[in-house]
Image (cartoon, rainbow, N blue to C red; front, top):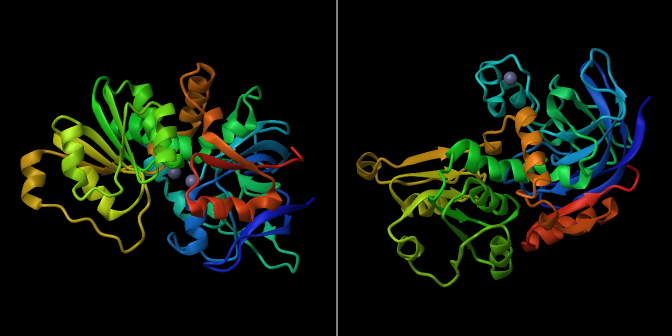
Amino acid sequence: MGQSAKAVVARELGKPVVVERIDVEAPRHGEVTIRLAACGVCHSDLSATNGTIPYPMPLVLGHEGAGVVIAVGDGVSRYAIGDHVVSSFVSMCGRCHYCQTGRPQLCVQSLQALYTLPDGTVRTRDSTGLPLNVFCGCGVMAEVATVHTDNLVKIDRQMPLDRAALIGCGVMTGVGAVVNTARVEAGSVAVVFGCGGVGLNAVQGCAIAGAGMIVAVDTSDPKLDLAKQFGATHTFNVSGHENVGKALYKLTGGGADYAFDCVGLGKVSEQAWGVLRRGGTAVIVGIAGPKDQITLNAQQVALSEKTLTGSYYGSARPAQDFPRLIGLYRGGRLKLDELITRTYSIDQAPQAFADLTQGGEGRGVIIFDAA
Ligand SMILES: [Zn+2]
Ligand SMILES: [Zn+2]
């Protein structure tokens, strides 16, 4: 039995998102249907609507959702109706080179599930019967979604679903970049560029890892104030600064051990590289536009022994890391309540995207009433 549900759809590049009623088909082999409780509005969703990350339209948005399983397809043994789940925007086949070597965030199946389910088809159609693509195999900015279980992680039913949703992208990406990718050492010096949804989580990841000095960098004072709540020991507003690298080098007393570009701009990645002390590690977390480039001095790369690395999805192993992050939240070590700065009904989704474009701080979350 299919379901009729409201969904947030990107119809035309550069145009506002629309909320429309769609048909969601019943789950096929290996899939489940979930009723969403909450879905975060992520910068990557916005990037899909404006072409920064190229996606074929029409596209059901959403990849940071949590909800309850309401139907189970054939061949699904690990999930039952009533289970609580969080979406993973990487699909984890469990069999490829990357899954088998502990790096499911690079799973090859994800490349086949960029805008469909892993089998290359979708369960979503609009009112005229036209198939609708789904963001990264998820499309969970909808009241109901049919998703492959390779894109889900089961969580404890006691965990509030609106908080849990945030773990599905922003929290995992930011905290993971620090603890999984960079493996920040206690007492070290870290600089985080960009204090949006992901950057705030990189800041709190540094705090959880015990970094001694955490410098939050942004152009917005309200975002920097929020970064302090998440553990930044210092803040730096780049607006009006001629030489950001020099100023940060001075502030950190000779350079940082770790720097994180959570903006996703080649220019910012270069600043992250530039602020490192010798032997330091710069991590590119934000997703830059497809033509953006980075220029480094080749000689200095060798002489300085610095490392430049990417971090995709916080080098997540979702099945292990989501429960760990929930454990940190329950232990009072991971801030999720404070991350949710605005909530919206699904009908208010266009406003949520407008607010994100304006650069509102923290995370906006769509709360669905039916769950
Ligand atoms: Zn995201
Ligand atoms: Zn795989």
